[in-house]
Image (cartoon, rainbow, N blue to C red; front, side, top):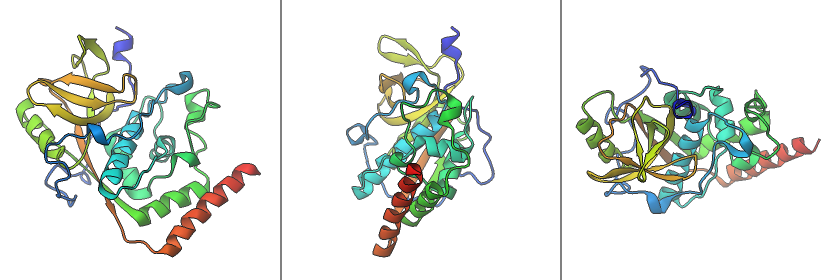
Amino acid sequence: MKDRIKNYGFVIPEILPEDFVLGGSKLPTTVLRNDGQWPELLVPHEQQNLFAVETTNCIGFASSTIWEILIKYQYNDERNFSDRALGIMAGTRPPGNTPNKVAYTAHKWGLVPEALLPFSDTITNASEYFSPDPLPQPILDAATYFLTQYELGYEWVFVGGSMQEKHERMMEALRYGALGLAVAAWHEEEGMYIQDMMANHWCVAIGYVKNQYWLIKDSYPPFIKKIPWNSDFAFSMRYSATRKIISSSLTKKWRCFLGNYFKELMK
């Protein structure tokens, strides 16, 4: 029972004035997948508790994954963002963070490649994982440059409502992209992960079979999970990524940022 009530990094959020709810923001409304199914478009699985280190950074992992999926699908641009860097920028520390704070951080400050700050096997605890803080200037520069390439957005899928109303909104939102979803981790029965306690984890909803189950991409193995259809979720978030027009000179500047960072590492 103790393991079942562990917090994996999801902190119950307050809906802030700057947050939007589905249909109330300026997020793109172009339907990307009319059937709302994203499984075959997955980016590689990543685990948030490698090397016996629990990061409580589930929101960073899930949010980065969704933006990777959106950018790959819309623009054929394969990215792998540093979940660790996003967690540091967002102030994530045990026991975790809220989805809107992490999403706002990426929207405001950007994302950086995994190669600049990986989850390496030299990390032995959460304090090391969430360091250096503040991040070195070359990493911050890389995040700033990313925002010259893409604009990131987010909005809540629902605020309250009946289970049926939430399901309808989730199915609608899945037409625009994979979703962040608050879940209870993890009580498995016959291949289904039962939602029988308060949400303590944030993962990625990637599809569904109506009236049977919701399909989840998780940051713990098994990475693909099924949640019973009649689950009443408390929070879900939609994300967006829109590419900007950039010049070749800025592309050269990005390479310079990478070079400067690795030079710092070698000092």
